Length: 111
Image (tube, rainbow, N blue to C red):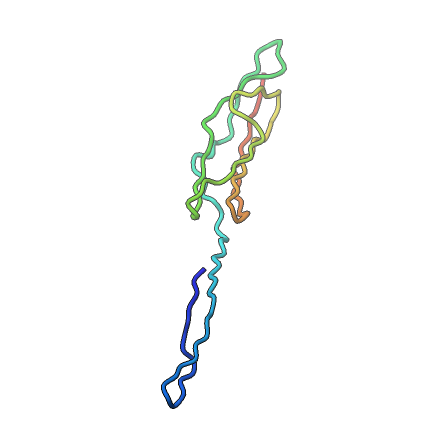
Protein backbone atom coordinates (compact mmCIF):
# COMPACT_ATOMS: atom_id res chain seq x y z
CA UNK A 1 0.00 0.00 0.00
CA UNK A 2 1.21 3.46 -0.83
CA UNK A 3 0.30 6.60 1.02
CA UNK A 4 -0.02 9.70 -1.13
CA UNK A 5 -0.16 13.23 0.26
CA UNK A 6 -1.48 16.07 -1.89
CA UNK A 7 -1.98 19.77 -1.17
CA UNK A 8 -5.61 20.61 -1.71
CA UNK A 9 -5.89 24.17 -0.45
CA UNK A 10 -3.43 27.08 -0.24
CA UNK A 11 -4.54 30.30 1.45
CA UNK A 12 -3.48 33.86 0.64
CA UNK A 13 -0.45 33.52 2.97
CA UNK A 14 0.76 30.50 0.97
CA UNK A 15 -0.14 28.12 3.80
CA UNK A 16 -1.19 24.81 2.36
CA UNK A 17 -3.49 22.24 3.81
CA UNK A 18 -2.73 18.66 2.89
CA UNK A 19 -4.84 15.59 2.63
CA UNK A 20 -3.44 12.07 2.82
CA UNK A 21 -4.83 9.26 0.72
CA UNK A 22 -4.12 5.59 1.00
CA UNK A 23 -4.13 4.02 -2.42
CA UNK A 24 -4.83 0.32 -2.64
CA UNK A 25 -4.53 -1.30 -6.04
CA UNK A 26 -6.11 -4.72 -6.33
CA UNK A 27 -5.33 -6.86 -9.36
CA UNK A 28 -8.06 -9.30 -10.26
CA UNK A 29 -6.76 -12.45 -11.92
CA UNK A 30 -9.36 -14.09 -14.15
CA UNK A 31 -6.91 -16.02 -16.35
CA UNK A 32 -6.79 -19.78 -15.88
CA UNK A 33 -3.50 -21.71 -15.78
CA UNK A 34 -2.10 -22.93 -19.12
CA UNK A 35 -1.72 -26.72 -19.39
CA UNK A 36 0.97 -28.42 -21.46
CA UNK A 37 1.37 -32.11 -22.20
CA UNK A 38 -2.20 -33.31 -21.68
CA UNK A 39 -2.06 -36.94 -22.86
CA UNK A 40 -4.31 -38.38 -25.55
CA UNK A 41 -6.65 -41.20 -24.57
CA UNK A 42 -4.82 -44.54 -24.58
CA UNK A 43 -5.55 -48.24 -24.76
CA UNK A 44 -3.95 -51.05 -22.73
CA UNK A 45 -4.37 -54.80 -22.90
CA UNK A 46 -5.56 -56.51 -19.73
CA UNK A 47 -3.68 -59.83 -19.36
CA UNK A 48 -5.77 -63.00 -19.56
CA UNK A 49 -6.79 -64.14 -16.10
CA UNK A 50 -6.52 -60.60 -14.73
CA UNK A 51 -9.17 -57.93 -14.29
CA UNK A 52 -6.80 -54.93 -14.38
CA UNK A 53 -3.76 -53.59 -16.16
CA UNK A 54 -1.17 -50.99 -15.21
CA UNK A 55 -1.22 -47.78 -17.25
CA UNK A 56 1.52 -45.17 -17.33
CA UNK A 57 1.79 -41.71 -18.89
CA UNK A 58 3.79 -38.52 -18.65
CA UNK A 59 1.88 -36.17 -16.37
CA UNK A 60 0.70 -32.81 -17.71
CA UNK A 61 2.02 -29.59 -16.20
CA UNK A 62 0.68 -26.05 -15.99
CA UNK A 63 1.97 -22.52 -15.55
CA UNK A 64 0.09 -19.48 -14.31
CA UNK A 65 0.33 -15.79 -15.19
CA UNK A 66 0.84 -14.99 -11.48
CA UNK A 67 4.23 -16.71 -11.53
CA UNK A 68 3.15 -19.11 -8.78
CA UNK A 69 2.85 -22.82 -9.42
CA UNK A 70 -0.82 -23.92 -9.70
CA UNK A 71 -2.10 -26.54 -7.26
CA UNK A 72 -2.89 -29.82 -9.01
CA UNK A 73 -5.60 -32.33 -8.11
CA UNK A 74 -5.61 -35.61 -10.01
CA UNK A 75 -7.99 -38.53 -10.14
CA UNK A 76 -5.32 -41.20 -10.80
CA UNK A 77 -1.55 -41.66 -10.65
CA UNK A 78 0.60 -43.02 -13.48
CA UNK A 79 1.35 -46.67 -12.72
CA UNK A 80 -2.10 -47.31 -11.23
CA UNK A 81 -4.23 -50.35 -12.04
CA UNK A 82 -7.12 -49.83 -14.45
CA UNK A 83 -10.04 -52.24 -15.07
CA UNK A 84 -11.46 -53.47 -18.36
CA UNK A 85 -13.45 -50.66 -19.98
CA UNK A 86 -12.97 -46.90 -20.08
CA UNK A 87 -11.75 -44.91 -17.09
CA UNK A 88 -11.48 -41.13 -17.24
CA UNK A 89 -8.33 -39.57 -15.78
CA UNK A 90 -8.63 -35.91 -14.81
CA UNK A 91 -6.08 -33.30 -13.73
CA UNK A 92 -7.35 -29.98 -12.38
CA UNK A 93 -4.89 -27.09 -12.05
CA UNK A 94 -6.01 -24.22 -9.75
CA UNK A 95 -4.23 -20.91 -9.29
CA UNK A 96 -4.25 -18.71 -6.18
CA UNK A 97 -7.26 -16.76 -7.49
CA UNK A 98 -9.34 -19.89 -7.89
CA UNK A 99 -9.10 -20.08 -11.69
CA UNK A 100 -9.07 -23.66 -12.96
CA UNK A 101 -7.91 -25.49 -16.05
CA UNK A 102 -8.72 -29.16 -16.66
CA UNK A 103 -6.98 -31.93 -18.58
CA UNK A 104 -8.93 -35.17 -19.12
CA UNK A 105 -8.19 -38.32 -21.06
CA UNK A 106 -9.42 -41.93 -21.05
CA UNK A 107 -7.61 -45.14 -20.21
CA UNK A 108 -9.24 -48.04 -22.05
CA UNK A 109 -8.52 -51.49 -20.67
CA UNK A 110 -9.34 -54.31 -23.11
CA UNK A 111 -8.76 -58.06 -23.39
